[in-house]
Image (cartoon, rainbow, N blue to C red; front, side, top):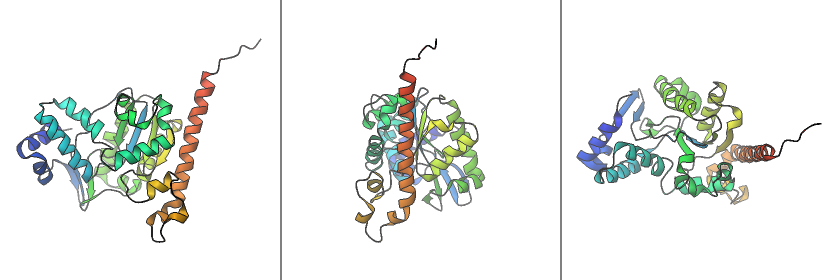
Length: 273
């Protein structure tokens, strides 16, 4: 892969956040689909929890440019820029990170890897997590962030190649005991594909939560903060209730299964006379 981060940083040095927004580093294009670079390379080799999204969006791109510009002014080396983008930018922002923390804490997912709460995942527990996207570049379709189904991703050669090279390959480098949570149905389908391809074992998948970037009532409904009767008649969440309920139940089962496995593993083995 080309060394995109050098060109990315060079453009920010020359033109700042506005410069990279006006002239982003294009990785590839295929008809109506375009992929633009944001730093994503940092890896936590001993990660115990992998949070899987579909692709970065425009908010991610703006935040990445802002963080990178600040780090360049502080003369941070490239590896630090990559790490801090992974920590502070990916699955970050004023809406995404708080929603994600609330959902992870709702199911007590951090406790599965020995952390007291989700906020610790991006602080003292950062080395225990690995955010990954099926498509790590900002991927758009006709200018809008790609949010299509997984089948569409596989049908577009450019997207499929990126998924296989940048996601499946990375998954193969993570330890076999790592646990996975998908953010959205496309990411969940991507994880199921990884299982069917032999890259993951089904026991590693905890479940799926809605995309935390979604505003409105979807996350509140998923967290059982509001009920169906509280939704307005034209709320689009009404059309998503079936899969949100199924995803909530799947997450509960996944967490319960893993907790029970830990209890069984901790029990002393009895000798049989």
